[in-house]
Image (cartoon, rainbow, N blue to C red):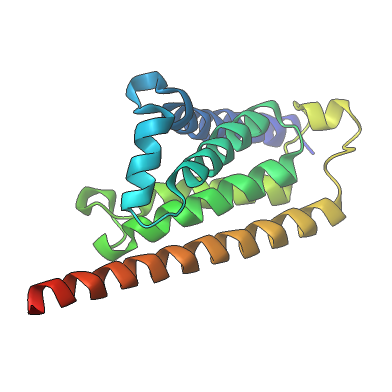
Length: 178
């Protein structure tokens, strides 16, 4: 791989990983103007992610951990898969508003998720901890395993969230009918 491509991958890792890590730190620690774990758990529960505290932990760790690992270029397949799966859950919340962020849509979650997935599949490049460790955690089998596991987990979380929100809507309709 050329130095130019390696520099491009480094820049992409720093940008995408940094944004993801900052978003996760807002959820977990209340940094950067975030609400912290307690309030994030309440919000997650209100959005249909149950249990809220476990969902807040999972989202925060997927973003913070996945983001930091992408920045470092370490365990890149697992980092990319974790971040992509987390962003799939985030996109499911915003999907009813459409694509564009201006309307409250899932544009940012899609961009971050696709970028993280691309890094997880392509690899981190020469300027990475994976390269320094001879790619011990950046193997083809790990790409397949990480992305399959992440996709299955994201699908289960989204399906559960949709079921919870549907139950909530039915209950609210029943209250209005009485």
